[in-house]
Image (spheres, rainbow, N blue to C red):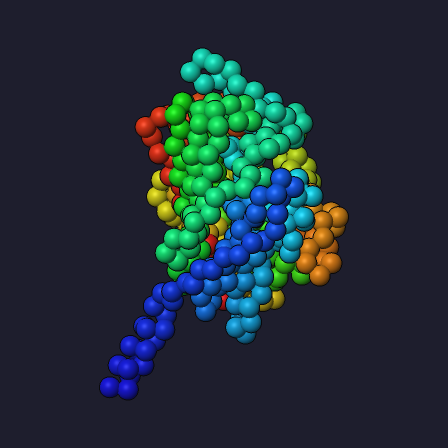
Length: 364
Ligand code: GLA
């Protein structure tokens, strides 16, 4: 009987703890618009997400001693985000996350030009993409839904796009569901650009964190970070994370691809069938004992090792975000897909609904 109770108790306590959702004003934009921040909280995770850029502002999880700590880079005031146009901390870049070569693509015989903001290419949907828009927030069960209407011609993209991002919390899992519709043929690629440091944001580099990526191939890039077009095997290269490997063990070896990315800044071709939630990556930090497991329905994940951080961005309490002090695992379609008919398509037509899902599960 005792054993049975213990089992029952255990089942009840690990049964999904409900998340409380509250919101308040985080700050104001120069045009006077209020930026709302939502706090999703249960006993194991506390996440704050705001309307500006549909961004994750902070995400606290337990270390091996049960101590909560924030594991994503960000700022404590809206001004920090407004001054920083290069990091994309916690944001949902769009309408096309990652790069489009020369900012150009052709759709149904018509050429489109996205403004160049990462010469010579367009990055993350152009200089005024979804990451710098004030989305509309709405509480939903266990979370929040952000909505953005992007007008026809926005940053050069055709069609009025209505995009939704839902963040919900269930136990120690954060679920992100993206959807979008359009009234003209267009392209879409949405992701979340959170910078993780499982030892705690601002607490050293991620070079000793152990990473696994469920990918046997990656998309090699040219010197401007545009895929060359081939899918190259990771086996025998510094890109082999099929078994847990520290981020830093091979990051500075003499390798042309690592030179192009100034470290890791590459799309990995995930195993299995896109469209279905399946393992993508895992990060383990021995210092804190924290583990992050990423699952996604996307065909790829951009692993970026924070190479462009240089200590000039300052977080809460004056902490400097130094080179490689965080890593991003941006689940997405491959970069430059609008110019690569052989890559999984990023086209969206009227009447279709784009759907993408990613989960982050925290354990220790
Ligand atoms: C993406 C890109 C990187 C860099 C970061 C933001 O991950 O692939 O090259 O631009 O965004 O700094």
